Length: 60
Image (cartoon, rainbow, N blue to C red; front, top):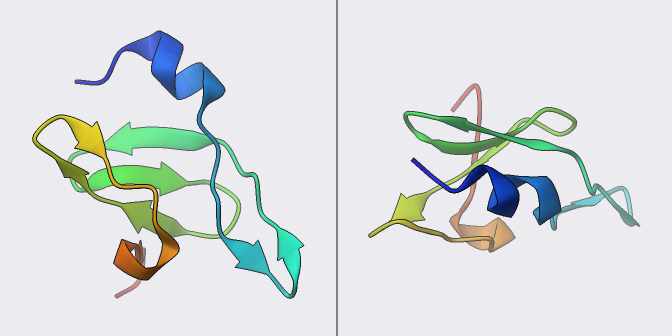
């Protein structure tokens, strides 16, 4: 489980139609879920991988 203070400062780095998403993230078993764009960022060895090309869509 990630430190809640870390979750407070992290936001989604993805682009939505050329604009930054900056959606809030929620920790789920699969990683960090963006409530705005639906991407899930993996957590590897306790470290969130905040790279859009590593993220998966929630419906994938």
